Length: 589
Image (cartoon, rainbow, N blue to C red; front, side, top):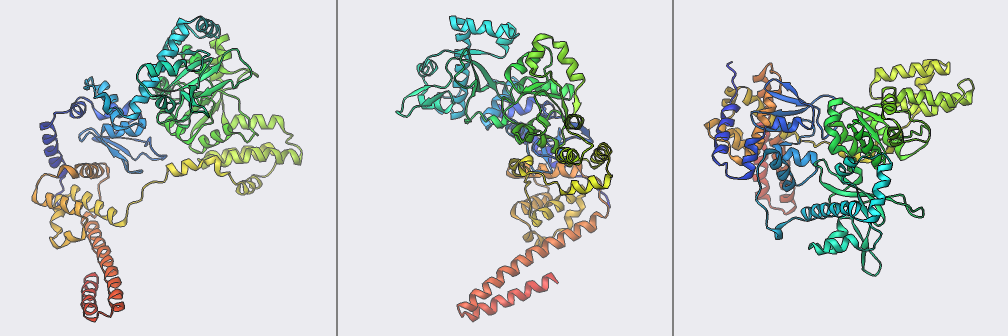
């Protein structure tokens, strides 16, 4: 049988039509940007025939099911079923609305967007503006006030250079009740909007006051370096919290943000590891010392969302903060989750009582040596636990196994897991079988895996009919002659969209624009699938099963109608329905 693809002809027609209507910024952006280059700046793409493939950045997987088609300028993940054009990708990976994706890609393409009517600005746009104006206000307070100069000298004394103050846009919030709020109101923003941006607090009597007062300000950026929130460190006070952050807002969610990731993402991919620290200053000093693959959790434990973001750039994490191996801390649970998600974890062994900023400010080369000597998470756990417990006593053996068995159980790779089981058995001077038996008894706490991750990884399930329809279309795209096997009567067994596509293919007509995304997805899937043996047999079986599914559905509906007619004692209708039931029963046999 002669096999040839028909999807390329249809796509060519669609592209000709698209080019003819290039009359908007969206079309111009798509025409200027190559989807492979755009997506490749976020994740690692590998050539796969005419297309590119990668591990999906939107769900966890071991085998790559994420494909990019340079011909069609689309992407699709056949695991989580997400896909679309460059705008859909930017919306998904940046977590933004279409308007924000449009601005991001317009800037990248060098396309100038017309300024929208101020009355039509979205709530998100106004919050971005409030955050940007607030950053400028704090910056001016740092450089233009006497107290700000004192704060600046303190920051310079901590080892932060002048250029870093500018680069990271550090600022100062004066010790006044409504300094920032009054400034923003003078610029046309409402006090309710300022509160929604997380910059003011409404008191019990209804009046507003600034959230950040008398604090060093660290602006927090999204992946496009837009300010979305703030961290504030107290200056020369001891009776209040050392750090406060913007609460969750429409723009800022502390569980989804990593400080410095906007500046670190390129270096993380280039060096293929991310250094994770706790504080803003740690990040700034690390970048200053040319360790620009450093990000911070900003005082929160690692969350499932943050791990998903990091997984886009590298599987290797170096942990530059205190690790409590026995404590049931939020930090420990975050590290456990990273281990479960397949990250290669290493621990930077810091001098007691010091954080990365302390070491770097004294001598950056010392911190480089600490990175070079970082220990794998398993080595770290083993060495630390064995040094604190007596492996010769029954009690010590039990305590050691209590700490190390859960760590071993979280290793996703069974070969690697077996290595550590053997090592633990040798250290405890017991049989390997005994360790394996105890390992079976270990129950990992649900929070170690994170409920959010379970929700994130609930992949969409397609119905059997949808799967069969897609399979039939893919087979048709691989071999045009198969379409002749679908009769006009068969079309009633398909959904309306699929029936319309089949009709267009039979008549060699253009696919309607409303169905082009679905058709592009199927065309890409047909391309990336390997050659299929016994194609005609598979096609016949799919068509037969699809017909059977629809007839069974019809029979079920008729049965319900018969029961209803019997209940109403409508024997004439009942006889007619029974006759119809018998007809469809014969069709399925």
